[in-house]
Image 1 (cartoon, rainbow, N blue to C red):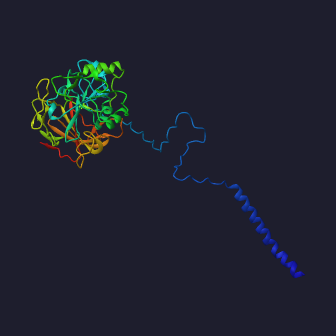
Image 2: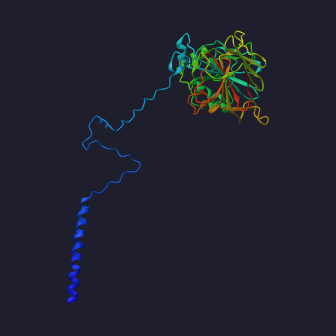
Image 3: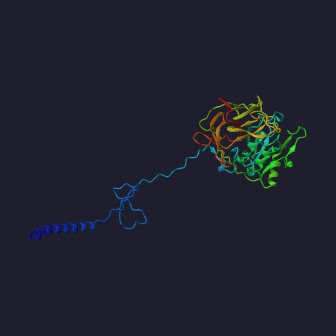
Length: 399
């Protein structure tokens, strides 16, 4: 018994000491606030005061550098030599020139289909066009889509039937398409297009065109642009254009480029050549080894710009002549020229050639001519000829 009592007394001081230590520990824990973890990837801001922030920002402390104020981004300085019709309603969007009568720029462009086989040479009215587009058709021939807006002409032709490229060009120029007719699949595509409600097909709009009785049909169909504009005015179509073109112009040749004095296009039927005439600052057109002549005045056709557009050419199953496909590949089938997306580009102006690409990312996007850096290549003010060529055609440009 005595031994048991003794053990209790010996343990008592130890228990009291343990109890006291436990109370101190609990008291200390209650006095410590819990730390808030710092959010990851978020910099901690040091507040100058716990008071509510004033309306104006507090001045930084003397030993704290003020944050740098970013310099305002300055837009690139515009090239003073550029002529941008989109910024000046008095300029032609297709030539960069200021017409004597600015009212002509309020009329809708005309896209007129003109033949190019031997039986129609020389053609009428091409010298007055803002833009002439030459492209391949069946039987190794080419055909023109001729764009008029800033100038009028009393006789343009010989006018013939439309082709698949004419599903694209009127949208690029916001033009009324004028043509003699077409095979049914092409006509249906034109009528179902986004400009199908403003086309002038001679087959159903005869009075808008006229025939020359001294020329054998079907090469005797022509038109007066004044009559065509009167016709579309009566129908409510003659409105200022909203072209998908986004071209810039410059009087002086832009920097860069390579010397160019001649360009040869091996179209199968009539080879085309352009030569630069330094005296006039213009390009002279030859076709089939002979100067290409304007019938109205007997003068050689010229251009301020020759625009070479490489595009994918696909022979379709549409028969343009006869009822059966001939040859392999088909020689009488319609050719789809894919003027969408992008393709290689060369621009001839002022005795130089500038290389880049044409861009048309979607149907109504601006049709642009850009260099390797994506900067627009300016055209020379004046008329242009577009030479649309297959991607595998070897166009030769000589210095």
